[in-house]
Length: 208
Image (cartoon, rainbow, N blue to C red; front, side, top):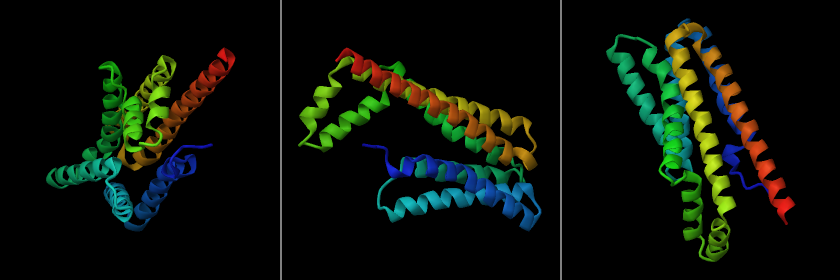
């Protein structure tokens, strides 16, 4: 059974990377400005995430973070007289911050995935004892901790890559280059995650 939320399916994640690039390209052709197209695309993407969260009537931390960072980036963009650097840095700031936060939870001994599973147990009284029994297994806790570290490292690397590109790549090619880099980094992270999960599952079966 696939327990992955629909909004995190590979197809939706890929669309979330490719569609902004397509929108940016179309807007740039229409208005003839790479900087203006970047500003419009970033604002539209954040607005879409926020609209989806409102439609679903739930607080989406990613949508909130994206909207806030876009607002800050657009404000800096306006106050700086149209310098696109703030808009370019925003991409790396979001994933980099999330990645560092995930690694921090591992460092302090409270990996986020374990915390989330504990929360799920509290919200499901009928399955609470079953979930807590599974979570008591040191191997499962170690697996969740490792997965948190893999995701955190992937997002941190993505953030660092995006920030580096923002600083060295011209605005005209930044969106295409940063999207390609993001697909590569997240793709590697996905492969590592799947490989680890398969190895962990095979190891569990071998011990039975």
